[in-house]
Length: 213
Image (cartoon, rainbow, N blue to C red):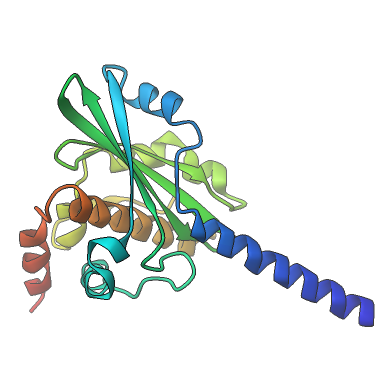
């Protein structure tokens, strides 16, 4: 009995240690040279920047992000000192896009959700760098991920007639991971809008708050 209790304790400790480490390092590309060249073959170079909510506005900014997201930031994955990697993609001196990722808590463990957008914040590629799910193959399938191409943060802020509403859960019994994916993508776009695009979509956030009233 003592061995079972000890084993349970050790497994729990390992789980939380892994979760904390996963959160602390943020979400970076495994191979940025390869990944950015694949998505942006016309790119000449890219710049990498690590940004935290803490340095950009602290608790006040975190509160604004929570309002825009529609829920609280998760206390393990989304503390204000977690560094977010932002890859600015250039062709010569011109910015042609961004690649950025977030950690998102899923049903079976952490997800790493990677978005590539054009310079205006429109999604041109989305993929999971990591997903722990027995139905991961269905979530990674292009028939699902390609549905997000062309979407912007505006589509997530406005609920009426939004193309986001037309995207269906690809899994059989995993609605929570589908919801987590939508949350992770929305959060990813909010952070891009905050860190790189000067909150250009705030007008749609304000408009979205008035829908349904």
